Length: 166
Length: 268
Ligand SMILES: [Zn+2]
Image 1 (cartoon, chains in turn cyan, blue):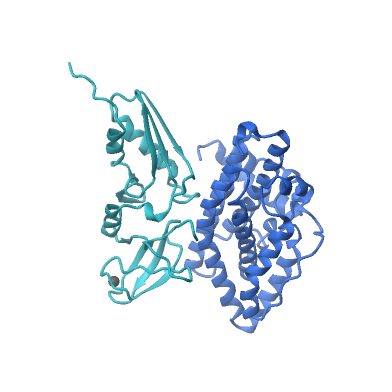
Image 2: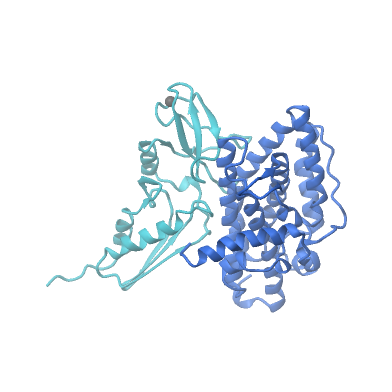
């Protein structure tokens, strides 16, 4: 007979590492900084997620995938997943590993700093050149922009920086 | 303010303001979505649809706050209320131009840019103020909306600047669009009959203060483009905040509720 391991917050986090962004499947929602809080109470699990953008159509999919990932823990009897806007998600929540994995997907991670006039700069996701132009601040999804690299002549995407002092 | 200690008067004031905010973004987003596939080029099209999608997300948040206050189901509030119950400003309900969007749309891009630029600047002033709202859940949503709004403002300001600095034809069209938009601005900063309740409860800044702030924010750009500062009508011909609307709203609601009735049978 195997005794059930205790349901700890750490084990829930481990399970959540398998939940990827449906639109960027190399990056987990953990590395995107979308996990606000995880609590356990006996066999109950509650996860609070921070949406990146309010109108993001992927949110429902992420919620479903989160529930499914936690269901993999055999001793869980009840799962609660909810979204909150407090604290608000900001792009500096993305982990270093998140930055690496975004680059692996061909997306430049969001820059950490804004210039004084509120604009920002990223280097090319492919060759690292700083010689880039903004093609369209609105990319294929709300959270991404489209840029063009004048060095390697590639079109690439960048994750938009989002901060509370915008 | 905590939900459990809210007086009925306070709750009513919050609900009234939320309906104004939600209906504004909902109609603005709907009119934006009608442009899908029609903007001057692909980048503009992607950007506009992205902005409309964000804005629909903002409206959904306000409707959800209303649902949490017991006003009804958020989806129904968005789709199933008659025109006379709507509290959006006249500006947001106006059609994009003549013609039906599926058949022969003759939409006016100068009008779309001008409406969007002025509306987004007005929204910015309101959102900044809402970040300090006495109603905490609303203040928290506003903080999030503000981050997304930043990109919307950048986009529309760029378009406004470009068209105003373009050919004489473009300038003429833009000036005509400005006249149309300004004529409809009379209720944008109005709270209608709810002015006293909304302002005295510290939910958002006063009509006058916000309108003044808006003028201050757009003045540098307009001056640099040699555009006269708009004279907002003192009294709106119709005040959307009191449920007075044009036929454009009726027509718009019919179109969008057809889609909803059709799709609500399915999951969406
Ligand atoms: Zn490059």
